[in-house]
Image (cartoon, rainbow, N blue to C red; front, side, top):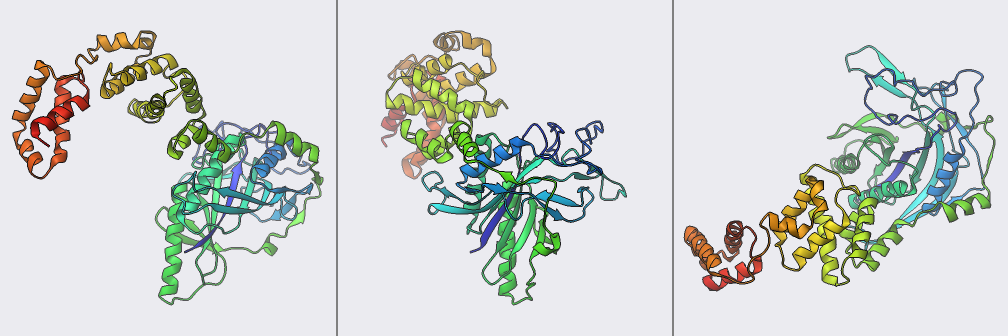
Amino acid sequence: MFKVGLEIHTQLHTSKKLFSKSSIPSFISNNTFDDNTSNNNKNVSFQDLALPGTQPILTPNSLNYAIKLALSLNCKINKFSNFDRKHYFYGDQPLGYQITQHYNPIASNGQIKLFKRHNPKLSKDLLINIIQLQLEQDTGRSIYHSINSSNSFIDFNRSNISLIEMVTEPNFTNIEEIRSFLQYYIKLIQNLNISSGDLENGSIRVDVNINIPNHPRVEIKNLPTISSILNACKYESNRQYNILKEGLPIDNSIQTRGWDGKKTFHLRNKESNVDYRYVPDMELPILKISSDLINKIEKFEMPISTADKLDYLMNNYNLNIKDARILFNNDKLLNFYEICYKNSNDDPKSQKKLINWINHELLGSLTKSELEFNENIINVESFIELIKLVNNNKITNQNGKLLLLHLINNKDDQLKSIESLAIEFDMIITSQSIDNSTSIIIDNILNKYNDIVIEIKSTKPNKINYLLGQCMKELRGKVQPNIIMNELKKRLDI
């Protein structure tokens, strides 16, 4: 068992930077080199470059966003907060220090509870304690054309962008807990509309602090995806375990390690707080956060919580957690579902079919067509009519899927009656029983696949599904599968 704490840096999508009036371009989070050099250092002010004579001025929206996150994480919001200077030198940090919050952060002492009913893979309800939330400025971005190049460049577009750093206690003891929390946090900041929550583009950057019993803590820096975070934790915990198991010498300093996609590797020994020489930033006034401001944000700007929204979907629509999460993670899809639900029959069977058709058939058809869901992908009336045709045994489920795929890729046909389209494509079920022509087709299939018939009768009864598929293929969905299956079982005496 390991203990893990997370440090998560979240890039806020304010219109202006944290301490300057520079706007934030859409390409700011891209971690790759931009060959369009007109974009590099395009959104940079004198303050972003730390030119002499400039002073930082706080962007109010950054503070409001921090308060929203603090409220969501049940933190104690400090009525008085101030900024500090964290001293270190690096090429993409022109001030020679970072403006952050060390002594009196925006908020502290929060906690989030993840419920097993919302996360079935959790072994139990999980309580995560938040040590603090702090506002700080981002650095510039160092750019290296290649490993062999002697030149490096600095793009200051990212310099001074608003970051919130959240630090958790080491409450995580397994991989699933880390995964569940990260997924929760990303959806939370998206729901709050304070950040894109995109790990791969750098809007969120995660550092991990990990150790097993009797081994000092190790920090793993700048992990770009959830999978890399989880894999790095697995590798590092095993590495520490093997050191103890083999009796190897233990480095008692706090190591900082990197991740190359396969293993962690040593970067440096982590500096202590003394090395950063934190001092209050005298150019920035003390923040006085009033109760009125907190109450206003809480009353008018806070969305429904993740737990409450999932409970609402599960209770009001009788959804399981898997289906509720799919809708919860896509606001447009959820809106489409709710409109369809209001316009569909109150029969529980119809409602069950509705969620299956949206979460599985509709999304599956979109994946096949390499499309993403949007409100114009299919109109509600056509979608409901299609489901009714299936429910009323006018067309088979399989032909319904084919018709849905057609409608997605042929929007003009959505203006037509769906039943008329089914007639046009010869999809209408013509028989609710085994007529002579259907009987002949079944006979032909049984004769053609006599070897499978023998296997079914002897040791492999499940192979009857193959015969069913062949029959349905020949019948082109004009008879319900259950009718054909019953006839096959009758003829094979199983």
